Amino acid sequence: MAVDLGGFYEGLEYGPAFQGLRAAWRRGDEVFAEVAVDEVAGFGLHPVLLDSALHAIGLGDYFSDTGRLPFAWSGVSL
Image 1 (cartoon, rainbow, N blue to C red):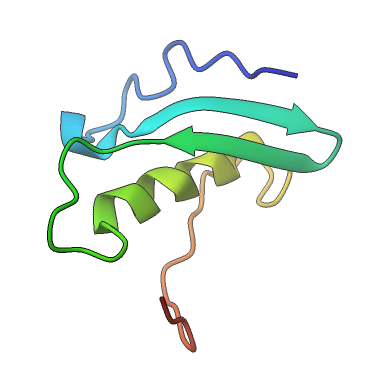
Image 2 (cartoon, one colour):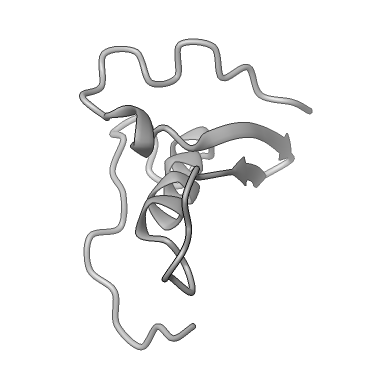
């Protein structure tokens, strides 16, 4: 089922470059996200693209309604 993202970034102090969540869908407990950034030259994975993908976490039941995102990563490779 498609998720209505209207107003998703309202009230947040994210600049336009950090508002890359374009569309999202839910299927049971799963969340699927479409993200995009304007410029990706020089990056294997643009940091803004990764950040935008993590915004979809708030659409699932992973962290209830606290709006938390992962802060530290280890053992991650491209």
